[in-house]
Image 1: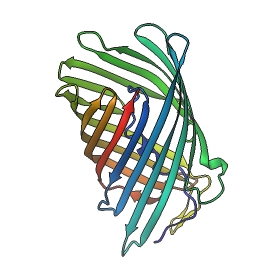
Image 2: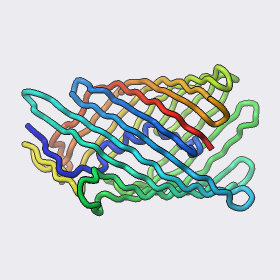
Image 3: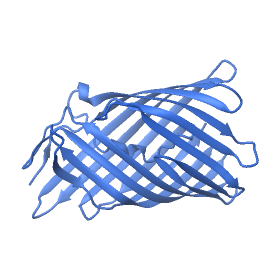
Image 4: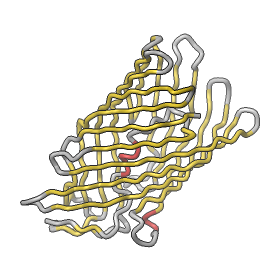
Length: 292
């Protein structure tokens, strides 16, 4: 069976979020490379991420953040006989982020984010299916100066591309319970941090994520039928190291492995017509960032 793709937007978009932690303030700048090498399903995925944000002071304590994020994703599925499956495609995802941060009191801040998104192969004219809108609202409680510093994030996120268009919860709680140790509990990310000192830090991450995409501008034909959507889910464990060059300037690298992975194409009735990738994969991520 051979799959032919004329235009494919939004595919594997959930993988763009595996490095997202709602507890972190936005980066002024980030350059990152991610690789999931070819696995036993003969699937390979790589991504280049570029982020830039500009914080603007409003009044005494509030801030507006205007920024953009670009992701170039290369997906390669190449299975030989007896399958003869081939998908080799490059996807472009560009976000315009507009956020307002309201300082409610010394501990609490309220945040609202609107994110128009363009996601496409850009091989044809941009259509309605290439553009979506994400909205996130939440509250952040930051207590960095107590004996055991904590950070709590509670919020909801709305994505106009998901199958069930309802707000989904964001939860993040981090506590530095020891001068060298901190834990993170949340959805979709949990983990542990070990601080050698102010410059060197080790971190484990356990991430559970998923994505459902309606392929409005896509024609995918196979022996099983026409696909109109893609459904993906993943559970991932990583171990990483971060080095602080100076205050808020970091180099980092992570390595890990998927514990569960499933990516399928579905028809109009949401029947599974083709499995893109259901095999475990190694995972590598490295980059440079400047925090706010």
